[in-house]
Length: 195
Image (cartoon, rainbow, N blue to C red):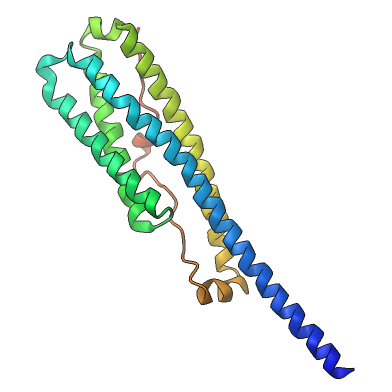
């Protein structure tokens, strides 16, 4: 009888640790899925920018440096996204992505500021449509980033609490990095005004 009780206790403990492990795997898959949504929205954002630059190019011929800065920042952001997509949650990859996206947002802000000085560009229907799509995409990125950060928080909490912390250390569940933007000014969606 004592052997049976011991066997039941051992099976219960093993099952408990299996449940903890499966919970960690589920949480990790959750934040990776949430990052996939960021990937979709940032890719959409990156795809809009060449059309925006091409539309502005005809009007801003002597503002070539600004247009080149936007293209360069976009390319850096695409590279940052590729690195983060390869390893969502990796601290270095997430910091590189955040930095490149911050730079892209800043250069886009400069482009939109220049647009104010060119009434023909400001009134261009294609430019208005692209700017509206970009603003909409910025909102989607913000929502996707919040969902990702919530998933990362849930995963990190799950892997750090006892006794799951034992399982997470034993099986290599490393901490995931949220996607953070350092400057509060950068957190705002670029303001686009055609009036």
